[in-house]
Length: 125
Image (cartoon, rainbow, N blue to C red; front, side, top):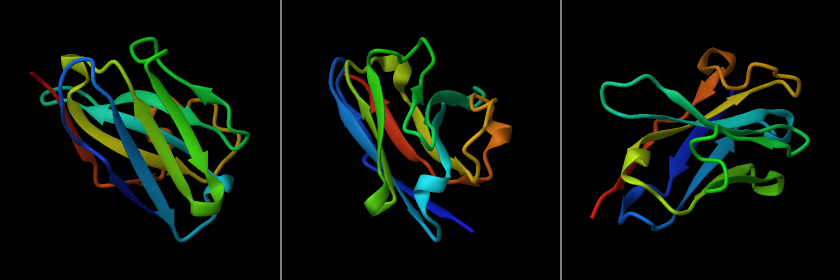
């Protein structure tokens, strides 16, 4: 069993930056594919990015070049650095994990077994 806890959300102006963190407890994070998703009011949960066991990262076009995922296996922590934020980035951001290093459909919410409680990110002037 893995427990995920996100932190770092808040209110930021357009063009600003935020860094989200996700701490995994209970198991070694390096054996998990981990990802970030977000959900805006009235919309489906969408893929923001993933980091695989070998530290390869993948992003959708909507955040590519602006968001960066990293992990610190010693601290069982994953980060999401968000730069050049836009109002359309406003959402609740969720950390997710699955005990597999060979997940192919990592953009799919159903591939992940563990989820955090979410942290609100609001981009507004």
